[in-house]
Length: 147
Image (cartoon, rainbow, N blue to C red; front, side, top):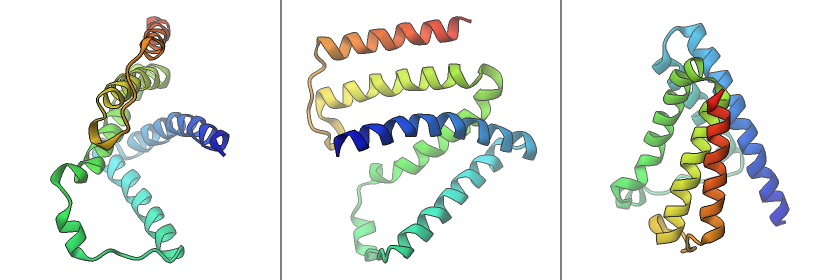
């Protein structure tokens, strides 16, 4: 079963690269990066709403929403900033540069989050292998961006 999730994670990487191109083209067609981001998130919202409701998902009581700490609401804001940044950056730096830099940033942040057990993650020390992995990713980014 673990292999399934590893494969899905790999497919997610492919999807992110495709999404960058799709959203960049949407921006060009609309000539508006914020509207393109809004449409991207809007279609995603409606897709998730339909899937949630079609699987008999229920809406939790409002008290639960009110009890959430403020930072738990920031995932959508971070996602909107990411999508908008992608839309603005891809035409200027290309998909490969954007994705390689994004992956490097994700990996560094993930190792820090894991090392300290931040945001409720299980603590996994930043050992030699993980730091070597970051170094290799950074070397790969340098090679991709160098062109």
